[in-house]
Image 1 (tube, rainbow, N blue to C red):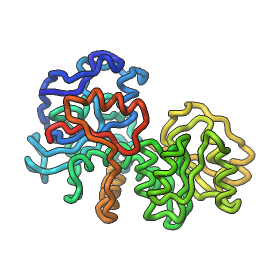
Image 2 (tube, one colour):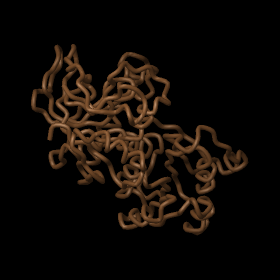
Image 3 (spheres, helix red, strand yellow):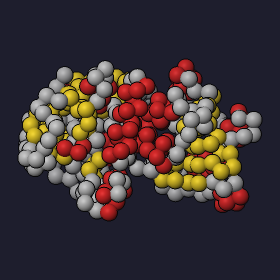
Image 4 (cartoon, rainbow, N blue to C red):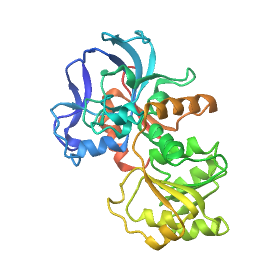
Length: 343
């Protein structure tokens, strides 16, 4: 079968390759991919910075949606032709954390496209527990976009962030896919939603979607700007995927007793914070990664009930998957980039 795969690290080593067809083992299903959405994770894998040993060719892609093609022994409730989206996170299902329902905290946690062959392929094999039927009114392209960013966003907001209806929220870096998923999930629930970006164009797009106000972090101190825009109150919750210097500014944007949830470190792996502010204002800094089975199911229920449709910036034909990855790296898009594999 064909796949958009690496034969080495770097964009020059990404191309449409022949790879072995997957076979479903016990408890597994083979999904014929219809569409695969891109994530920044694909660029990390492509660059080789993750330090994972890959075998070439290595198919990229974490997110995907398609139809069940074959099922392995012991699979129940899923028949060939069932439309499903894929949870790209694999866990052992046996450790104490998995058994407690916290699959994303599993010590043997792995991701499609990162540790395992990915979804930018005609077919992919995954455990039965990793596929979910999706709302009938969504296309395969839209369902593929409900993977990494929407699963992560749901857990950040409602599981780790414990967001309550009417709370005020700050989302950093609204140009990113995760930030946009956070916005779409939070907007129907939050009282006010503030956003940051270094691009006025992206701030304007967020305002058109219903953001309360935006802050250009290349021109303003985020903490001071948010306090000014909230009448010195601050926000209840900040959700951040940048890390680095943004953490201390996030803390300064909070009301007393507020929370920061962090799910990335694209701006730096180390942060300096004002500890006096942390303890005096009784603030919380919480980490979050992907989501549990319950998080995925609850996210899909929220999407279905709200009629939410993921933001799609552009779709690419399968043979132009490398070009889609190049556009992803330019970071000029607003919405998901999706490759149509077997349209």
